Amino acid sequence: MRKAAVVLAALVVILAAVAVGVYSYCRGVPGEGKTVRFEVRKGMGAREIVDALADSGLVRCGWYVVWRYSRLDEPKSLQAGSYMLSDTMPAESILAVMARGEVIPVPTHWVTVPEGFTVDQTFDALASALPVSKSSLDSLATDSAFLAELGVGQLEGYLYPETYEFADSLAPAQILSRMVATARSRFSRMLEGRPDDLSEREVLILASIVEREAKLESERPVIAGVFLRRLRLGMNLESCATVQYALGNAKEKILLSDLQVESVFNTYLHPGLPPAPICSPGSSSFAAAVSPDTSNGYLYFVSRVDGSGGHLFARSHPQHLRNVALVRSGNSD
Image 1 (tube, helix red, strand yellow):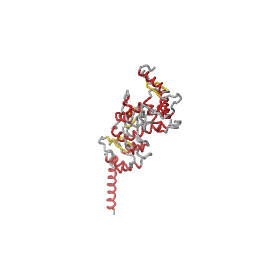
Image 2 (cartoon, helix red, strand yellow):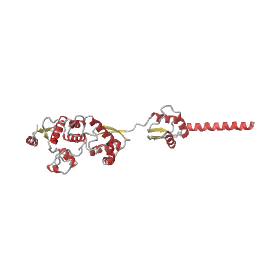
Image 3 (tube, helix red, strand yellow):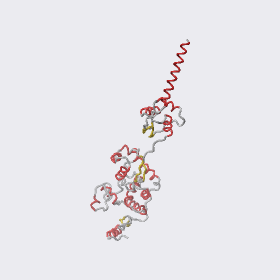
Image 4 (cartoon, one colour):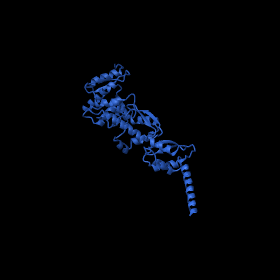
């Protein structure tokens, strides 16, 4: 009986020594000096994270990490994100870093999208400044499911012109979604008081034409007023900007032959507004389309040649022809 007690005591001592050894081993760190970029995806549970830590060689024993996690002070949730972790870090430190969400700062890039850019020009700007390909953006522009998710018929007009800071980790769809959301947010604030005979979409289309036609801030409401009066009188808009869009390039000088190009965007040939915006307008052009100045009775305008970016306006066609003659003579002051 005494022998059995001695043997039992010896076994207890041995088991205790083994347990202490295992505990000490598992509490220790691999310590090979390895640094790992460790990713915690959204929706990962604690057990899945611990298994991934063990697979990455950052911890020795998964059970020990689970036990330490159960004893972790609040907050206990491990935050999703990217972490730089070393195999010299104790499990407690790794868990604390993830519980506090001390993620690696995600690299970002700035990109400026000017007012009046088309979708194609915007994609060029995004692809040159961000780690995204133009082909991936082009694919989304024709993806009906993606457009439906955004609630738009097309991206033209909805990629709001602004200077953006985008994280390098963003997918192309996330980039475009943010730009469309920005456009909706900015424009929705200004729609109150729009002309009764223009829908929200028509205001956007008109604003896009104003953006490409107007150079001076003071003339934007006046030019918007010219187009709205022509619409109300059943006159063709006859906007050179829409012809340039139909041609697919912004020619410095439109030829008479260009005015005959067959396109639904050619407002010399087709009445009413074009079927979609021709660029992404800025807030000032959108505001002009919401509150156009029709008080002056203007129906025509022609660009000055003095480098000011301004226009000569006319209420009648004979007066417009005189303005055109002045411009051609170089005397448009």
